[in-house]
Image (tube, rainbow, N blue to C red; front, side, top):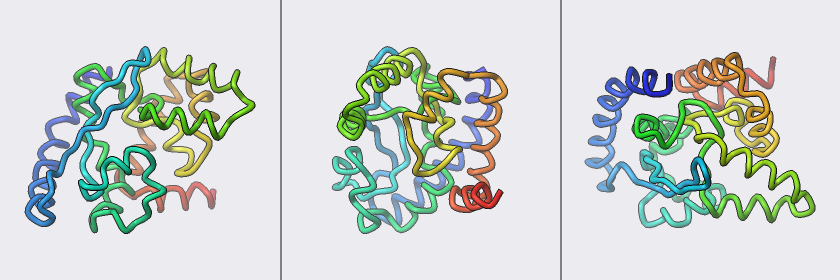
Length: 195
């Protein structure tokens, strides 16, 4: 199913991304795509493709923690790309390569795991269970955590999904992700909060 869905979406998504990438390159003068190393199934690292939203000289910092950098390092178009998740669409190629699934826990950097461990000291058993469960599945292009809140507890929502990866939940993630792609995270989460 992952390959079928990614294959159907790949051509139209890539045509749009290539046009957007050309405009970004001409406008900002930076390579529009970049690759970061993420932790995947079995704890193995893989090359994760993304559309650039940050100036390239800041990439090392972005991979550590984007939130610490603030908006000053973001390209003018970056906020709009992130709001709709367009910067993640090149990961359809990761799905076709077998690195990722359409739905699953979002792929994290190795350093993200370190930060989460430090923030949750005293909860070693929960952290170990969370990491072990993540290693058993491919990371996803979108996940339960992403559709629940833009700033929610990663461990909580990852485990909710991993302990019950039902077809109904996966369809909800997929359809909600499409909704976010159309309306943007700010509008989506505004509607969720009001509901």
